[in-house]
Length: 224
Ligand code: C5P
Image (cartoon, rainbow, N blue to C red; front, side):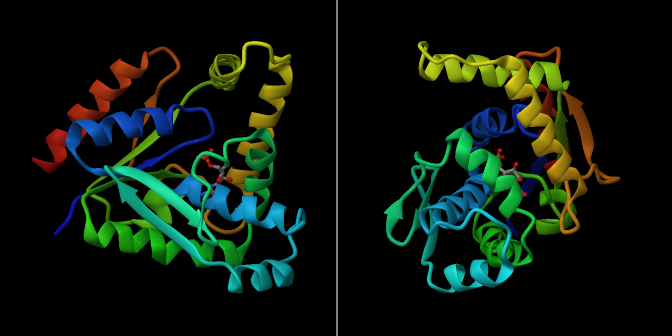
């Protein structure tokens, strides 16, 4: 039996940075489900689809080859034989991903791929519905969160780091995070929820290293 750790939480709560570090330290595969939703969204945009039209989504999905694999524990996502792993982090893809993540066809397309990855490896998987839908029997369930101001500040710093000449309005980032939160928490299928058996960790006042230590301790207590 393989071990599964579920990490859920809203945008900017530190999930991917923290989950990546935990995976490295525990030697688990880091499964980034957000990247899968982003990759499908990228493909919808390339196909000029920018609205939630299930019929068109279905047609595009049935003509899409989608591959997820690990290269040295790093998750690679390929759509139609193109490695899109590094192309899916743009604000445009972020905003449309919350829209397409509401699609029944999109979620059905990805859920078995995500479950299969957990059948074959020890995984630490991050997303919005991991503890509630994808891996309800996960050995450990963590819900990461932080205040919206702190999450906007983190995104702001990240964007400036990637390009210091960018003109960014932090209020705009905060608004976009609030919109994504609203869509992710209020959608009909697989919304972001705090399940009863998850441990909530508020990262607002902690450094990345401190959060990694807190969660590692929780995991090791539960699975050793
Ligand atoms: O985690 P990340 O910000 O990359 O996720 C992008 C978007 O994908 C989220 O805002 C959410 O709408 C969607 N998502 C989801 N379910 C998951 C992972 C991501 O709906 N398990």
